[in-house]
Image 1: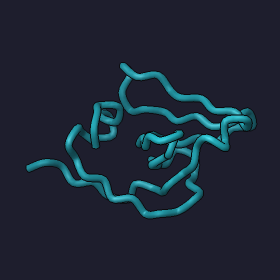
Image 2 (image 1 turned 90 degrees about the vertical axis):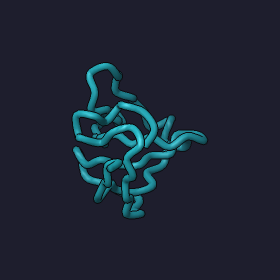
Image 3 (image 1 turned 60 degrees about the vertical axis):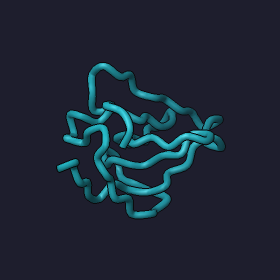
Image 4 (image 1 turned 120 degrees about the vertical axis):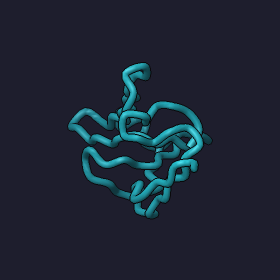
Length: 86
């Protein structure tokens, strides 16, 4: 992990997150999502208006995507375990 957007989920900068590869996740689950050429780790929410990727740090704003953006984003998988630095 690089960054502090998920610190309230106890996922810190430098942690290792294990991702189960799957194309779909349930609302509220933490997902690895490819946006253009960058991967982000956020809570995933699908609504009738699109997708919200929500950080677990109030310093960061949620990311919103509509159906027209779906060609630019892809779920890589679900976070199933993380390991903190010793």
